[in-house]
Image (cartoon, rainbow, N blue to C red; front, top):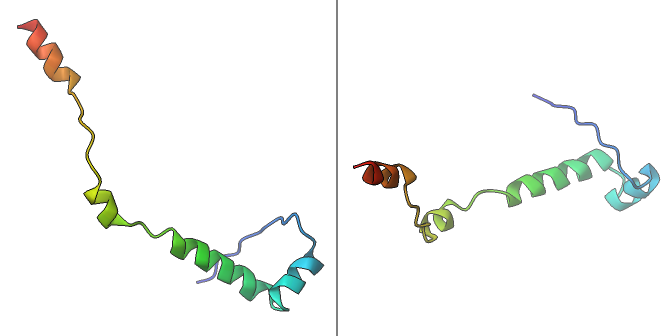
Length: 66
């Protein structure tokens, strides 16, 4: 399956082709894959971080009404 993505670069196409070394599509796809790979969630650090102490307002309201 292929998806088409349209971009509107602020740099000229000639400059982008020069940076890409000739194959602009492959270069852009590589940039996208690197960006997606870098954003992989680190769930271990998420679960190991300290938890917030949350006070439940419903409990306070229940206690006050007694």
